[in-house]
Length: 419
Length: 150
Image 1 (cartoon, rainbow over the protein chains, first blue to last red):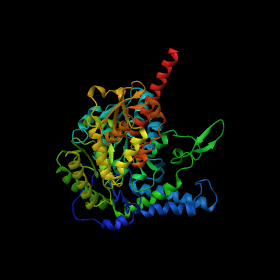
Image 2 (tube, rainbow over the protein chains, first blue to last red):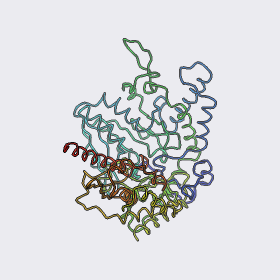
Image 3 (cartoon, chains in turn red, green):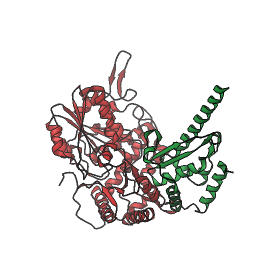
Image 4 (cartoon, rainbow over the protein chains, first blue to last red):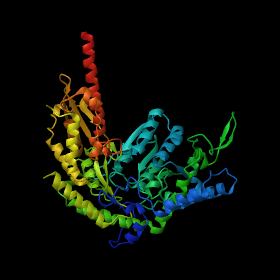
């Protein structure tokens, strides 16, 4: 049993899904003449009313530029913005709010660390380790870094079920390993990685660890102090918040050693043409006017998760996953890609003789939104010898009836296309 | 007398109008049309002939002859192959100059605009551009030969 996942003990409903669905206006519509079934939650989640209203409220009442304004609106906007920082701090249990940096999203956070930390601390011959199941945004920034600094990029292999080969990871670790950057939960397979174990092993070798929490944060309890990761990144839009903003958590002593990522306003203490001194964290990494409104509304997304309860959300999603998995296993010619013991609520599949794009189009015609393609994990798809999958990902507002619709849709596609 | 491009477009619009906008039936019909398109020989499925979309691949082979363009095509997606078969039906056996000047109004009328652009990039939009480009290149090369022979 991994140390990462809550134990799911019940198959009883944990909350009234109908009540949850009432908070998501977008779900109550028809697509192609049928009720929308939204199973593309790993790409982005829908937003509860509280988030939508917070955006409205901010622009209707509080909009001003933050931090330097001396008037009432600027003060209100600043207070709301900084309140989100404190909410995030408790949400991920950071030691202090200053360790929470607002970014554009997960990709931006990884690029920030690869650039600001990587350029300073990676020398020729040093190693960066990632895994075979990374999203392109946790591959390419490290490739760019290694290319620039003549570093070496190493890859932890993944087995047929989609689980990390930890013994191989142990072999890869050397005293030249400086950074390990690993996805917490795989976007294309659903695998939940034993990140705590990886972090401990990496630390023993003297490396720092970045955890890509994009797919984990909506589903799993996140405690960055308990994990003891050095950096943790995620996006607001995958946890019911607005697009265009996200979080980089970093340990203070590392953030303080890092040079700024971008130059501009907010990140400075004093500027003269001879010398500029930089601001303290977190502002050192927040050059320019940030995405204030979306940061403010993100707080409501976290409140929604806290009020609903992470354990309840996880239980509901695991029930959907288990129900869908067992129904899918009974469809002849269908193969589930990603059979890890511990998964978030993502199910990737292929069907003999039917191209994934066609599955997606046929389901869309029935109002069912899924994702098809390589899911920005081309190296992983290559390992499985496939071009892509059809992926359904479940969230708090999905129902068993919706899973039934998916299964019925797949049966129909197979019947019509293989006749 | 062969049909003009617009006659074929009108014929396609009429066929699709029978489906009454039902997306599922439209998809099935498109796939049926794709099945009727003769598959491309494996040796023709080369990198030179490939048009890559984000979601699927299209192979396009052209054989111009006496000012007339001939097309053969295939795809690894059944729906894309059906869409591609419509383009082959419209453009095969047509004059290069006609292909370049045509307003392709049937795509919008049968509700397939959603496949053009980046959203559901399946190689369909890229194939339209490629067909026009091939026609342009062929017409220009013909004109060059004419000028050189004068």
